[in-house]
Image (cartoon, rainbow, N blue to C red):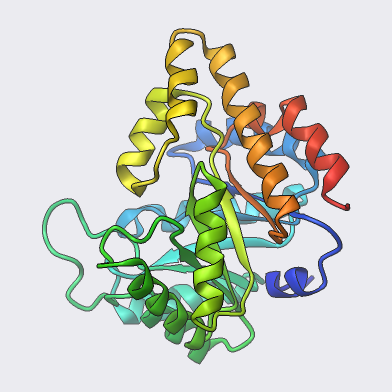
Length: 295
């Protein structure tokens, strides 16, 4: 059974799309635990799900194993991520062919982070646009997603230059954008406006992380350079030692973000749930999604 292109879901969408991002567990025990988690998430009927790809391709086999597990459980379409900076072009060709041969019709094309130590692969592709071109040349039928940065990529000199590079990825053959996480919707709407001003017409899906723990959010923000609003930081700081209260505050903030994105015309929301069913299934979030997704 061939999978639907995500670009078709975006073109024909009836309401507010919902998607989740998962990451591959480290071992068999982790896969067993995650299988129970993702089975619970079926009740929210996400329109698609994605699976991350480890730095340097370290999770290559597990990424595809999890993608196939998700498909077996009933999630469709499933979009594997693929990074290119630490993998030679010949190997990337084989990986893309393997993904296509397994029936996946969507790939999230990313540069990936440079290795913490040493140099990138000497034959690796230096930019995500190179991976977009490789995928498009080998499999014109693959739907390609790329990343966007509402608060600007940390390596970009300024927001307009960052959007210029994003436009080049889309012109090279990418079909839609999923954003890096943000906690203030103004960053998303300003980013979309800037993209449209530069001639980008493709859909831009906002990515959100429920901020259910201040230490967790601080760790993630060191990697993605997002801004945590002082109001949210103060609220989480006050209940730092109470996990349930922290989760409630984070979910309420996410719910309000989703409501604002829905009202502002965003095509949907992509949730970075960190493999946690409890976060995604909290009644506060579930009730909103069930009442508004098909609004």
